Image (cartoon, rainbow, N blue to C red):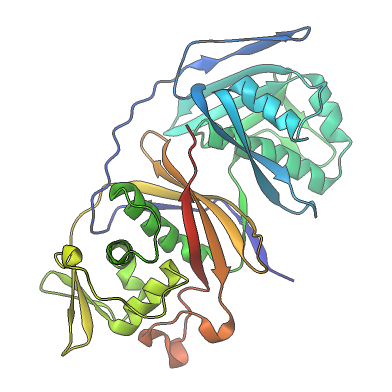
Length: 363
């Protein structure tokens, strides 16, 4: 049986060797929907927090085993509280009789807190559920709205009051939660490095493109070279063994068996010394960015996973990019370890390898 852990997993990055910039501004407004009969009246003021143009909405639904989430992608002409609400109904996360009373956003202590107020039918709906079904319903709705409106926490209420069921009292805003297979969290540096590389360099994931291969390795080594304890800083350069760099490359690219030659274009970032058999990476600076895994589910091929991850602006709480990764687990014989991970200190760096990456167009 696979081990999974429920985590709200993010990396806040303040160090690496490239520059990430994001200049976005948002303001705090309220998106209100009061439902009378079959009509919902919504605040039509356009705002980055509460209304967006045509785009994708990620809907979190229960999987077949009712022990985790799947993500369904819905395209909508306008992303609003009501359109997300209707998508949740469409995918069976809410019954038709539940009405949307009000949706609001507010900033508090650097957090963006959402509030979704529903009609009394929702309380009747969740009170009929078992513990697991109730959790998946509440958390699925929360996850869906937090991703759609770049929130950090969300509270669901019924007719303005806190929800109390036979299993739980929902008196505090809920955070984002996703379940990850055992050791998937060790791939966070890989997800982060690929997203920053693809976003900043405006490149597509291509395991046959030597420029992209070395640019990606540069990001991973630059941000996380210390994962290999034998790495060092010498004369302003990060120094890593060929073995360690190969391990990093294999985590980034499933198809790679050996390191290609460094293209001329990349030689101002990395060089190889044949005498020492070491790679030397240039140092630099990076601004703040945040990487967040928002979903992990079983892939089409046996043993593979589909991982959705976001690159975020942590100051404005806004998405920069969303990417979909296909991740392949490695067997015990192929676990990725560097020279410094042998013997008593044996510690596998990466248990998985990336098979493909594609951007998901949210807007």
